[in-house]
Length: 375
Image 1 (cartoon, rainbow, N blue to C red):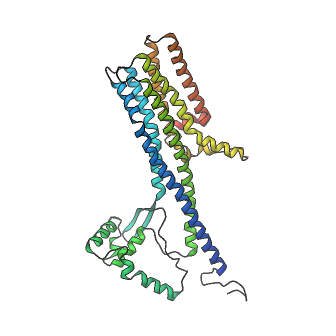
Image 2: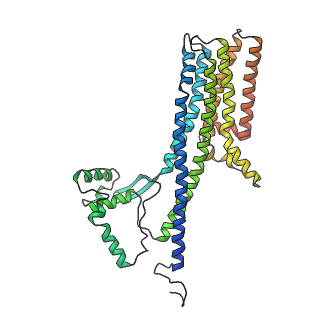
Image 3: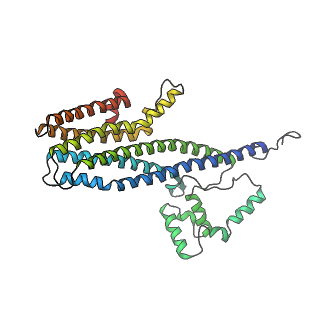
């Protein structure tokens, strides 16, 4: 206890003012975590909408693929199939990365130690909450513990029937908690608290948990936002290329040399455009940092923020090589007009130049090393 009029100090060393400050912080943290989760929920809904776009473009994809495999399949047809497949795989891959990140955002590892060893289990990233252990005096704490053991409370987790108990026991046995739970419903309920990462903590331990969890949420959140934007840009870019390719093919007849040259030209345009598109968000961030006075940024070197770019650029380069080879074979066929040959050669050369320029703007001289790196 402090002097007269001073703050009251409890047995845990916290004054009444300090406890009030801790409680206020925990309340603000809950609001902040709710905001972060609303952002992730919005991105999850947006990712669901992106899944619908391929369904809209389904007829275009079918028309292009059907035209390439109709009749006798030539070497340019095979190369164009590879390029088209790569262009379709790129946004799907970016979307899968996004869905994986969202899944990992909502779930976290729960490390459980028990008498027979230790187990890692998945849990929702927001843990279940208990009243901090130091908020009540001894008498009130004993009453709360007794209330937790009443049938009315325990039945919320372990319904009083044989089938429910068997289902709970099977789940606890998987994670090595069957023996710790014992044969009582109270023990089963306590083990389920452990699965939900709900452990007794005092106020300061709760603050430490929230602080670390907040950092984890923010870091993963910024990665998810960037990957969402990149997936959307890759999907829109590929959709435009698919619609353009569908406009070239003729549903009734086989592809001619000119049609193959057009398809190759569209894919040669797609490759550098998609490289520019998926690397744009990081460039936007760097531009924002430099406008705020930064003389050097390391955003483009962050492996978490740029992993999608590496995978997307690899796929785009495969498509570029396949489309370039198809264009070269079409130009060497001799059936194209002089003007078509000039346009085709220009598209091939321009695509290579723009792609290398985009790669240089993305990572400079380190681009080849980053593309072959496994990290």
